[in-house]
Amino acid sequence: MKAHVGDRLVQAGAHVGDARRVGVILDVRDPDGAPPYRVRWLTDGHEALIYPGPDSHIEPPDVPPATT
Image 1: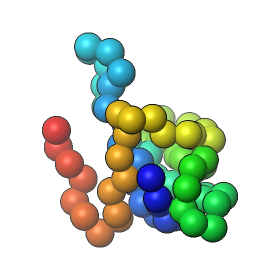
Image 2 (image 1 turned 90 degrees about the horizontal axis):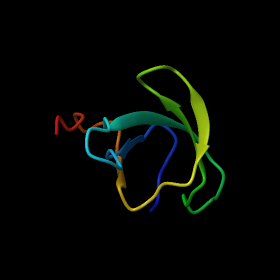
Image 3 (image 1 turned 180 degrees about the horizontal axis):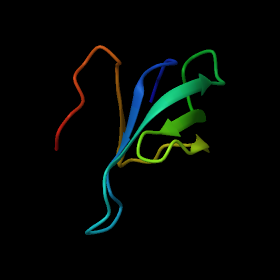
Image 4 (image 1 turned 60 degrees about the horizontal axis):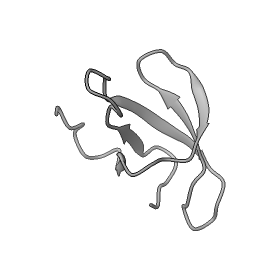
């Protein structure tokens, strides 16, 4: 997984009933764009250092957010 500052990190819910989470990538520590990423979650503004799992993907900022 490769990301850039400003990309969106989308995490699918890990369990039935869990909401999908979307955050904006604020910092990429690896020059090649590999994790970990500092992310601000859009739902509550919380910032966290994230190592995304297999249920996550990156969306560039110029692509409209997925609705599903």
